[in-house]
Length: 306
Ligand code: ADP
Ligand code: MG
Image 1: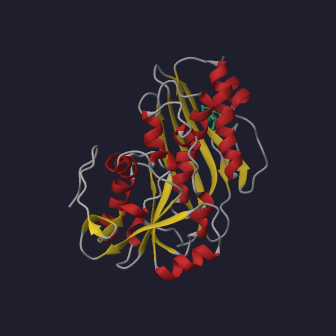
Image 2: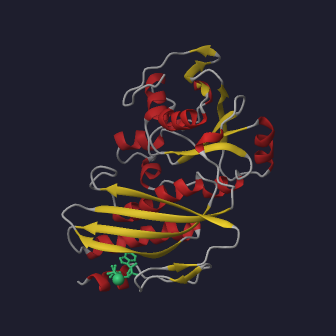
Image 3: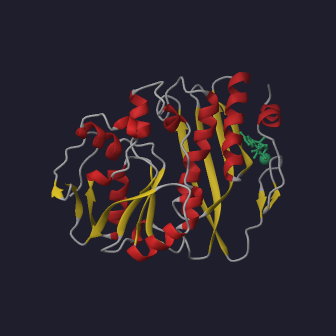
């Protein structure tokens, strides 16, 4: 099957969309950005066996390839708009392509995003790169570098589920690994409220660490405040914290916010729960408390930073 008929069959579900003057079919897509907005753009690659288990259903791979990118757009407080898909696959497997494209479009529809172009190549190893684009009013992007001493540290949803599911295939939490839910609505609500933000893809400790480094501040986190799914509550404390802090694949938002602005956020009644897990302090580094008492932690799989 030729490249153009793959595209025609699986990746050309056009729908009218604002700002898309020309979608799939020409050498490039053509967009008209809304007035007074900036383009926010990112890319993430998923490699089979590396970023998802080889036996992951095609539908989930399609969803996840889009979702992980929309999570990066949400983490800037931007509104997602469109994606490009670069697909490398070993063979033309129609069942796989049907499942994959259904999953990809399901995520696009959920978040109001349009596939506007891409590239299709043959390669011995399955690999997918999605580029996501979004808009933000000029100057309104929430960066990693804005955390202020005294700010609250807040995370959305629950953390650790995906890492736990990776070790327990078939568990009810498997859907949290296969179908991450980028917090696009919350990200938008945080525009003008959060002082810094990141999405949690590599585990809270590592990603919060990026905020601390960029903002040149430190943090204290209370372990009892971590939002952990009831399924993980029966695990030994250390193991639970390991999943929640260093697991990865959460695709929740971690942000810093003043007490006052957090009240404003709550008044907006976000769809997803948010949990205050600690605060920003001047003293560099990340320290943990358990019920208010200092709790040194040894986590596997990452280098603790000072
Ligand atoms: P070119 O050779 O000019 O790069 P292609 O033949 O690769 O063009 O692509 C033709 C059209 O199909 C382009 O509009 C391109 O963006 C789109 N396209 C190619 N592969 C994909 C894909 N996997 N998903 C979505 N659009 C694609
Ligand atoms: Mg061309």
